[in-house]
Image: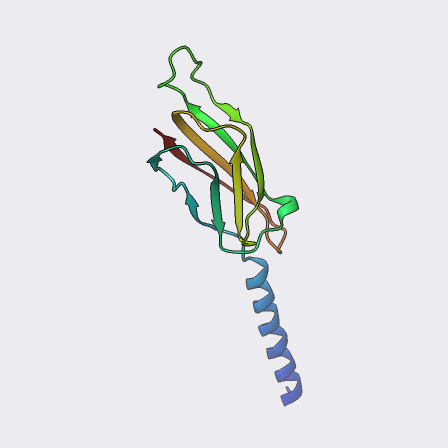
Length: 130
């Protein structure tokens, strides 16, 4: 094999490996406020911080109250919480703003994050409000 062919093959293989690595890079949830498993006062907003810039038109989240044992007379089944979901000031951040103050109970955030590779990644975490 000539030097030129060998070089071309090496360049093609390297480019393929690099493109494959980029294509498999998906957004990961790095942190949230409140943090997963935390027990704190009711937040006025919930922030999700990801490893990559989000494509906001395909990303989103739902806020669900999952445990209302501290609320006598209320059914103890998951209940959606009305909230607005928007991009944060940082393109890697998603912000969930409840329409009304959160009451005592356990909440779950179900999120969907899409970055430039267009592959949706989903996840969830829970926190408690005192």
